[in-house]
Amino acid sequence: MMAPFKESSSSTLRRWRITRFKNLVLVALVCILIVCLCRSQLPWNHKFEITLFPGCEDKELGECQVRSVLETIRYYQNSTPRQTTTNKRNLMFIKTHKCGTSSLVNTFYLMGVRSRLNFVVQQSDHPHTLALNIDPAKMRPLLPPRPGTVYNIQCQHGTFQPDAEHTIMPKETSFYSTIVRSPVSQFKSAFSFFGGERKMRKRYGKVSMDELIGHYLDQQPAPTEYDAPHSVYSINGIAADLGWYAFSESMAGSTLQEKINAFIEHLDQEMDFVMITDRMNESLILLKEYLGWNMTDIVYLNRMVSSKPKVTMSEETKARILKYQVIDVQIFDHFNKTFELHLDRVGREKVASQVKKFEEMRESFENKCFNKNMTVKGPYGSVSWEITDYGRNTNLACTFLQTRDIKLTNVVTQLQLTQDYTVPIDQPLVMRDMVSKIQRDYDNNEDPV
Image 1: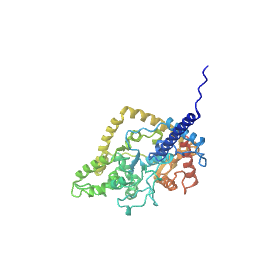
Image 2: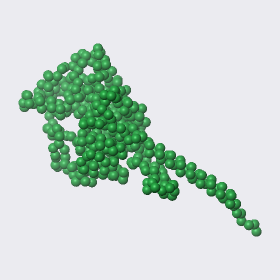
Image 3: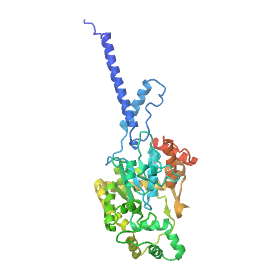
Image 4: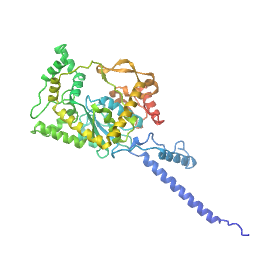
């Protein structure tokens, strides 16, 4: 009977060395992969920052660290990365006055705070207003993003200055967007909000809205063949926010219509997508698709609602407003048409289906956040519903979304100063607790809705 084969000690040692070498190579490759993921400039792909070897800081390479590596690998294998229809993930949002942007900015802040993104904010007493300049020596310093990362979102007020914006958030990696609104409703909102109505009422007393607007327009310079009035606080405010003044100055001698045509072409080249206030939910679904965000990333609440009763205007008054709003009218008409092309690109049925789901989700969220039988007064003559106990204690996303965007800008500024984006270092206790809970809930995969 043949004796069983016995492997020599040298062969066993050689096989052990080969196995050990393979294991070390595998661990090294895994470590490199994780380091690359940690250094990624796309921080909203995953819901938390990775610690390479949690609990193993003072131990030698061994079972603990290997187990941590394997657990991290399993997390990434089981997670579903966000899919985008573009190769751009960072958002450059040009905020326009009286286009529903206060609600939008709060939505972007909530998404960014939960995901610990870097915002473009300046070291200033008024960080919510972004004063950019192509000459760095003339620009207030920006708070830097965390080391090894880039800016992810810009959503502050500020006149669009492409040359300066491009240096902060390159177009190659950033999705440029803004929002426009039908010119009559935008003018009416600005007229009321920025004091035009109050001044006219003080001077002319209890007359109709048609008369008030008529008196106001009588005091404004009428459009000419070469120019038109423009101010972020009144007429052609959207054009003013999007950089009309500097652009029109560069075309001195051209007619107004030539300037408008060139300006719209310029905006077409700069903007990847222009949202429409009058089609807000469709706009947010399209933005979500382009950036690969989730439905819960775009949830919003109507934070500022005027307490004044709705008044009607005559067709004659509307026509006169449109005459003065000549630049904004053409901007709106153009991008309202291109909006249809975006619907075709993403898919009309897909967008319609998602809008329906989003509206149901938002209504359910709103009903949990608010007691709609009670209202409270807000700033600038606005009112809002009273926040429920659920919104104050259980789901602080309700309270966050109802906080004034100016206050949230200060919170975000303080967060960015910490460089680890955990809790504000110089904010009231209630804001620190709010941000901490929002981030903790997000880390535990608890969506805000």
